[in-house]
Image 1 (cartoon, rainbow, N blue to C red):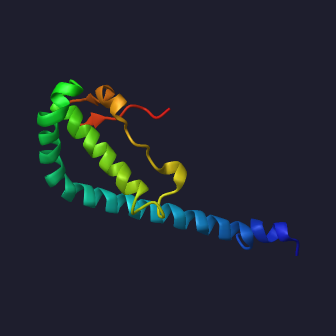
Image 2 (image 1 turned 90 degrees about the horizontal axis):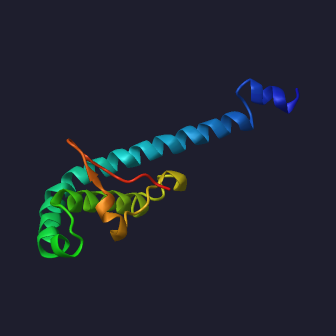
Length: 120
């Protein structure tokens, strides 16, 4: 039987590739779920620290609102988790990038959440 027939019937290298892709997607989903759980717990410490950082530094130097400081700290904390302990579970093309201090004032607070500027 030709090799192409095996691939069409779901056997051979084609099905192994699909299984590997499914496994990678599953692990990435588990990693993002773990990041959300850790983020939820860490926000209890992150929000007061971000408020303190705004009060001490960012209110004068960056002319940023407290909401922008909290959004910046939250976004960079998520990126640190995705690029740090969970980097082996999340594909490189799906990892977010850090939000730099130069993009600080571009963080737009909305009515319910803070939106990150679009990646270029």
